[in-house]
Image (cartoon, rainbow over all chains, first blue to last red):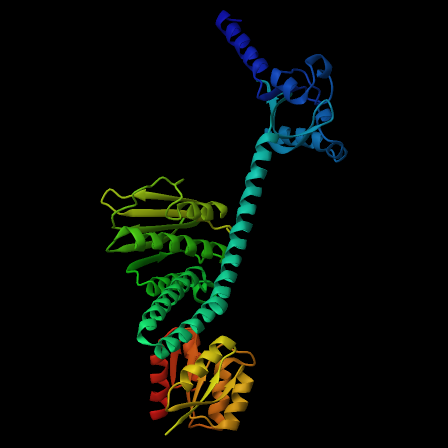
Length: 341
Length: 122
């Protein structure tokens, strides 16, 4: 062998032996282990001298051994060149880990099967992290749903109970003011004014949290009605290829509502554009205004409902970002996946 | 001429103050007070009011049902819907039932009184 080639081979052998994140080892054509590396020892828990010569089915859980999975994987690798699998594997102490496995058939120059290369990666941590992320999303979705239900309940309670009572008090105060001598009338009128102001604030609250009626009118019309009700001059460019499902629609509506409230309260904008389009198998929405911009764009700041917008988007598996425009004004941009696709 | 008025509202606070506000006017007289839609129809039949001030959401069929029933028996009755709901759906329902006018709760007493007089006069 050429000295350079020999050096390269040594280097390659050291590389394979030294890799700790992957179990890399070889099987003979019958599935017996013929080489072992540091990663294999670490992940599977066997020392080289314990495992070399044994059949690789020792890594599989009993149910897989019974169903013939190890042999089936070798046959498939032989027929198709390689096979990739994800599943449970067993360590030397009997505990299980979630593995990503690639078995590659190794042929020599004459086309004869010399054995198999097996690369195994321990995915337990990643799987756990993914599981946690899924759980977190599910929890957030439940929270948002519960919040939606709760705020609607509060809205109806305030509307049907509190406001009614205050209307009665207001009418009573007006009646009373008319019967009082002038020196007391001013006081009662003042009270009446305070009650009327409270009624008006409560009505605004109810309006903000009441159900937007998306099931009945669809998202586009609900947004249009909301814009009309709040006297917001905005253009809607609605280019969704598919109507969002009920959950996505309410999320889109609420985030737009939050963004438009910011525009009304802070932006002093002369025009607002609401753009809804289909992107990356989901819904991309932009609320663009030409106002003064938000003074503090720190998304972690508790202002402007930014946290709520972001949480709503993230709980639906999407994202939300708020940007200042170079030409002035603000863009609230968010994306939600179309979970039905 | 004294205008005979029937009030129907399921909220006792509103009911009582409505009666006092209208009775306080020399030309208006509250002849009966109903707490739900069924009672409203029954009392309208018994007292033949010229004007009915009718809540929209009430037990036993709501204001629109009561309005239709009252007008079927006494087509000359003028009905003023007086509601906490001012959305298009609620207003349309009441208009279809034959209600003459619609006021949202929270208007000034003077507006309410003026509306009752206007209905009685028209």
